[in-house]
Length: 226
Image (cartoon, rainbow, N blue to C red; front, side, top):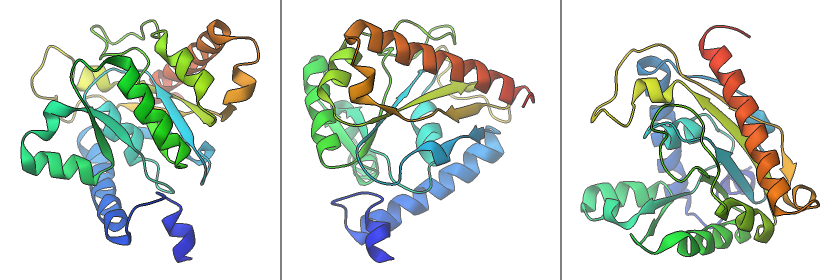
C-alpha cells in the first residue's frame, strides 16, 4: 500500500507527499466553495507513468484548478524564477513540486526541464498558448508544444477549463469571489507516439482540437448543462 502511495510522485519523501496532499485537499475545498469549480474526467489520468496535461490558459487559477481535482497522483509545475525570490512563497511552491525557470531562458530551458521530469515518470501541466488569455478565448498553440510532443515519450491528457477567466481576468489584480461557477474537464488519454504519426503540425492541430472541444464542454458544465 505504501509503495502504491509513493507512486503518486516518484522520488519524493513521504513527508513531502503528505504535505502536498494536505495543500491540495485544502485548495480543492476552497475552489469548490469560493470559485464553485465543477470537475469531470480526472479518472482518465493514468495512475503511473509520465503524463503531460495540456490545457488552455485563462487565469492564474488554472494551475491549482488543474491539479487540485487529481487525487490519485501529484502534479509538477514550471514557474518563473522570480516567484521564488520571496523565500516563504518560494519554499511553498517548491514543496508543491514547482521547478524554477530563469526569466529570459526561453522555451529551451522549459522543454529540457519538462522532458527531465517526464523521464522520471512524473506528471506535468503545460499551457501551449504561452500566456493567459486576454479575452477568455483559447488562442493558437505555440510551435514549441509540437517539439515537446515529438521528444516526450508519455501519455497526453487534454484539459479544458472554462470560467476561470471570468473569475480572475488579466485586467484584475485580485479574483472575483463567489462568481458564476468555473469548470474543468480532463479528456481521454492520447499516446504521444500515435499522436506524432502524421507529423508535428498534425499533432498540434489534433491536441488543439481536443482541448477546444473540452473547453466547450466545460463551458456547458459551468452553465449547468450535462
